[in-house]
Length: 102
Length: 102
Image (cartoon, helix red, strand yellow):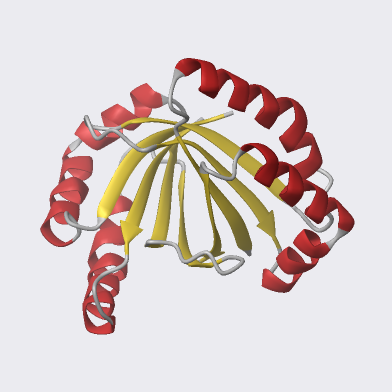
């Protein structure tokens, strides 16, 4: 299994964060849910552990059977729509990678 | 559910990475597996997505029912042993945080 990992850096202030979250949960995640081949997604809000302040505030993981299914999903019309939406509101915040679950 | 999230930055070169991985899989993860209250753990090797090079090479998540269980687990002798081991080989690489799964 593989997962597409999105780490989101904290917006600059509470107002920017609220606007980000509204778009993220109301618009972006419903688009993500339509990506073909995605088995499940998991979203977590990031908090401090042991006094270590993280620069991230959100971690999203989108699971696929393998990297081919992930690439097919992201290249589909639904995957492209989610990607376009992401770039419209989160380009400066998001860091993406692929995780090979071992 | 909450998860303790460990993001590991890439060691400087292939030799350092091999030594890191040997300690991580042979010594560290067996210690982590003993932490009381941990429901499951998931380790993923990080790869590039869409040409974005990540500064991380490993993502580990350790799941607990709630933040109290997480803190109890980490404060237990087994949790402290895993924490001490982590600091012995990964202090310069690891970034830790808590994820509230939503």
